[in-house]
Image (spheres, rainbow, N blue to C red):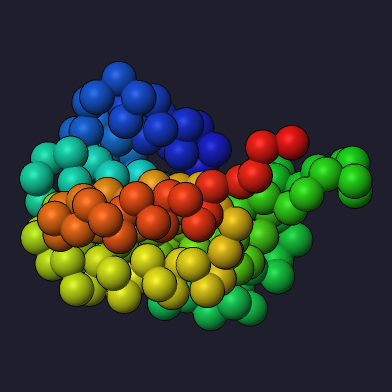
Amino acid sequence: RQSALVGLSYCGLVIRHPMLALKSAEELLSSSTPCSAAHKLLGRTYAAEALCMMNRPEEALDHVTEAFKKDASEGQENDGIFRSTNSDLPSTIAENPFSAQARAALCVNVAAVRLQMGDLEDAETALNRALALNPSCPEILKSFLYLRLKQGNHHDASLLLKQRRPNPV
């Protein structure tokens, strides 16, 4: 049931139906059955995205902040539904919801909400934290570029792109 609610919430976002996404995510999060850390993370993330789509960034920030506050010990549970049987595969956010990669993704989400609210200073703080957690993430670079352009700092955006762009082989 929980996996179905996560999937339904995701589908609601894909088809641009934020009410469906939010309703499914909230049903998952309010369930009386204990929810895995990965499901909680996805539910909060999808709820936040749906709220942003509905132009409710303050409420979205509450969901992202709550997801970010969770203790890393929650991520240690044995959540077989997300575990890969191939140990050669890199870990994903779903496999370890409190990894540096997952926390960096949450920082990017916080930055996106802050950008939507027009709070450029806090957006930059969140992006700097994300960069410290996951320096090679292209989404962080894209978000920084957007921030610099939003600030009207085209020169810094250009420099950032030149410094961070992978070298051609």
